[in-house]
Image (cartoon, rainbow, N blue to C red; front, side, top):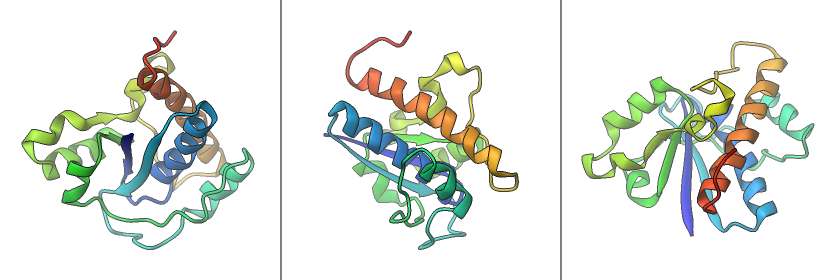
Length: 156
């Protein structure tokens, strides 16, 4: 079973969204994976996802209320097979924390969907509801392409 960790800054918007979306997409395809999310900063440890993220997810049939924010730990670099940052800043934070022999596990999540023409999942925290919808759009597409890769399929 593959273990995948999604990472953003506070673990209340982008990474829990990716966790919920990817978990459902993997279940739909019958792919056995362990999925989690975390933040590079501890601002929101123990909190549920942002209500706007939960609302956007619920409109697409996703439940995120049981997810709680946590901070990335050193143990995560050993435990997970793939650690996917939502943006360059968080990738840089992960690289600073990650043991040298585990750095091959670090990537930007949207590397799996280059056809989208964006490299980073933007932080919707300071914007309106549409930003959360856009995050879902990006995360849904990248999740499908990541699953293609895990299943040995080529992306179109």
